[in-house]
Length: 359
Image (cartoon, rainbow, N blue to C red):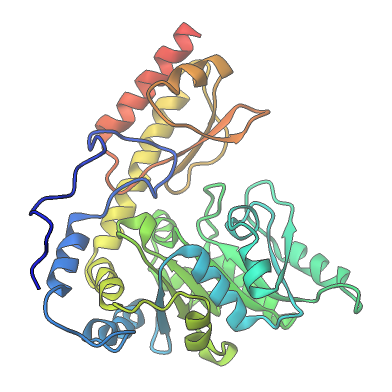
């Protein structure tokens, strides 16, 4: 039946030249991803993951994560994390994470509300956990009055922009497994971390002992979509049912799956992450040279944290939306995306310098 809408009825309502550094979610979809969606469009395919693109998805992920990987595409990162945690954690259990973890600070209580799990956010100055912190959290929950830690959740890269080395992850997973804990990784920016470290995706996950992964696509050039990846299926249960009951089973799954094919079958994941990381490095260099600006944390992936005077932030806000990470310190978080250019970075650094000069 022909559409009653005229061709081109959608109206562009934004300035495509605008650039922001508030989040790597602000960018659009990579052209190669949009092309893949066009390829998958047209004709009919079976729904709910019974299509040929989803059938190929497991092969795609197994090339990166090993022959045992099982893959479940979902709509978003919060859904991926909640489903993954439910698959490895009993309802009476707790999940150890850094206090700054996205799970703990940015998912609206979703893990508690939807999964019924208690989060144990541990203090960390750099967003990373240590085996000693895990030991202490396990020891503290020593009777029925405390929810027993059953899962350790790590973020790679962390919410503070730092990256665990593969050796650090191996130490943490070994300690967690010794305590009987499963290990989950929030890999919303796993591609950025792997590129920064110069290692394959498996080095920080399968090879390091991670049991289940939330693999990010949206922040690295996809239109939408993440994947729950069971790396050790023997530790995981119920994923197909958990995805369905969590309202994360897409009916037209082919449009999720083909995006990951575009991202992972070639080197698009590396190219996108490499560009974002390189632009963060450039931004770090320029801001470090600017009097009145202090880059406040290590730049290891695509995140830059910097402190600016209040008046300068107010002037910058006329042109850029700023994500204030720590109001007391005047610290802002600046995220670079796969489509951030040198010109974008240079323009922001120049605007910051001008704002400080006028402050």
